[in-house]
Length: 360
Image (cartoon, rainbow, N blue to C red):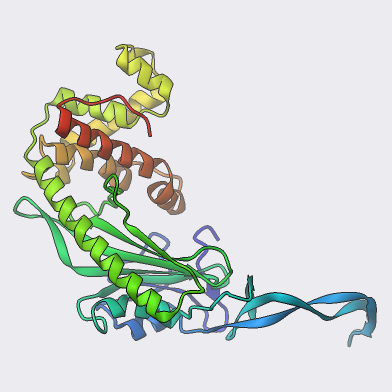
């Protein structure tokens, strides 16, 4: 199962919900209106609890012989040795073991993870839950919540602002919450974390509720600051005119797969680059010149449009093997890195008036 969404055989449902539009995998519950946090928990199949239970191992000297109803004979070791300072985390509705944790690990129930967002705005007012779900056996959950404010570029180009939270019950990783913007016009995921700014907070599972509340407000402050900075930056980019030749050079540089290709670009030897690379450059440049989302006043012939040409290509034009491959590329793979490269190049072009040859 490539999407790795949890399937609950007791309810015959996948643990996922989204508002109005289906996700790429087409699974889970689709609802027409934004739910409350309690409703989102149920829609996503996250209304289960997790317990820490003592961990045992077997005594090799304690061998038990048993006989089944089918008269088959077997042997088994009885688990009678307590493992000190370690526990298993168990999902109580299915009895699935989700992980092994230490004595200081504190289970953060799914309802507590949702309350992380609710606590920011005093009970959820203004927060709109868009998606949520569980992966694997339910050891990892994720939540996406839309903030009430937008990043506005020009007169009518709006970028929605989201909070994304993920946490696990398997002992790996902390509670992680991040700010991320999504562009309405072409539904791009913008991988535009500003340099020297962090858009993520991480909270240990041993932290108390008060610490989590404090971190929630910290994240909200980060979101507001980054949102304001991005709005100012994107509006500057929307007012910077860029020639077709500059756009082509930026695309060539952003899409360069390695240092060797960058060196050829710098020496004017682009004809010696691989045909695969040149074809991708032509596709991105073609998207920049013809896609409907690139014809707005803020995008056409602007630095802002150049940046969105790269991110929009991967979201809307690039052909992937399947939805999972597309998701991975945008979240953590080639699309993310190319988008970040385009972002850095646009910063350089806006500041220095030239495209610097660089590779992230």
